[in-house]
Image (tube, rainbow, N blue to C red; front, top):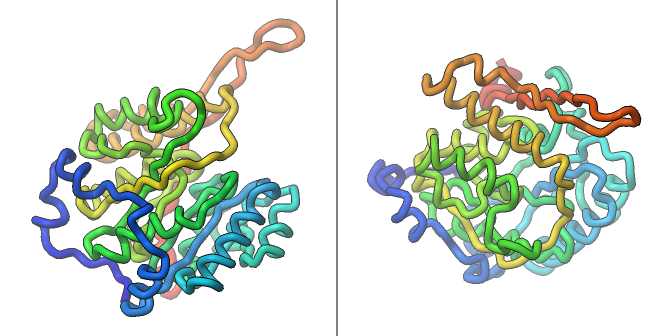
Length: 329
């Protein structure tokens, strides 16, 4: 049980974005953990929670401990908690293990492959590690973590077999547009979505780092590395499964560490490169645009300004199903 199923083109693909916004926007507060645990047991569905982590020793322990106590021991909804560690140099691994998580170094997964980098790499490799039918990805830098984040993300998946992937939205408590998608979303991702993938315009926070999905569906699409992973998944999943198979859930308010302004340009460049790559593959943009990944900006040095250059082209991993099948053959 637990495999993603379709009920036909009319229910999966035949929905416009206005209908989607009404039908596929959920409230996390509407889902009860005990009821979801009952549904999971009834249907034989296992749930895996994964936290991609890098130098988050101050937050990962409390998140894992809260998850373990509430959704593993008190209410048996979650079958496993795995922290995918991206070579942290602080106490992230120790804190996660002491709190009750299984910690896996992402470079140790599929070691025959060339090394990758970033959150997208950890998310992709987690599909080779996790055993659950449903996969929940959580940010590991959240302050005041609420286990209702997990029940909210799982709710649409456990109550509607047509839903294959759920993204979080939340009030960000950053002092400006609390319901907005964040700075990179509003000045980069959302304009690109409206220009080239307008069917995705209903996602309030398309770059949010917390999401859940059916493992077999997630294994069927490629993954970008780094910051491009979120926009890439939306584009590839809507092409694979249709808009009706995607959903978003309002998880209320949350706090997390914020990226410095100087890092946002490189993040936006990576996201733009991912969109350009997909457009080139679809024949809607020249191939050379997809490879133009240099991000150059002036920085002040001891003797004045000099140009700093960063390659922001995102690497890409193939669908995990293809990789696992090749390893068996």
